[in-house]
Length: 86
Ligand SMILES: [Zn+2]
Image (cartoon, rainbow, N blue to C red; front, top):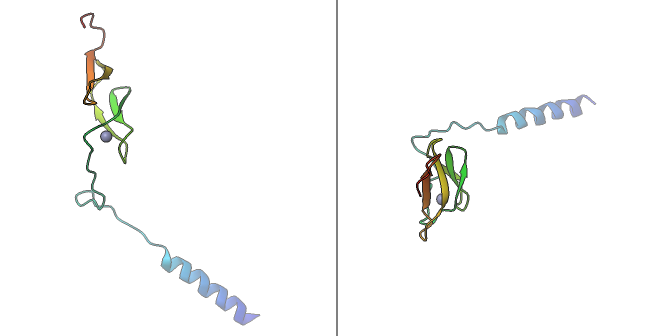
């Protein structure tokens, strides 16, 4: 009985040792994001969010702009919010 409980403690200790911590250094990211040429932008509040790339990324456009569509290159066409001119 005693031998069994000792082994259990050892196993617990091992678990603790295997627990790895990681400190992220954003100056040297191990994941390098290379944007594609084409982005599928969706407006989310003051942001344009691209949902077609490997990772979601966003561009801040502010609250006064509204995305009305994309041109043939997939670039967002912005319109000033509240503006009557086209
Ligand atoms: Zn993108």
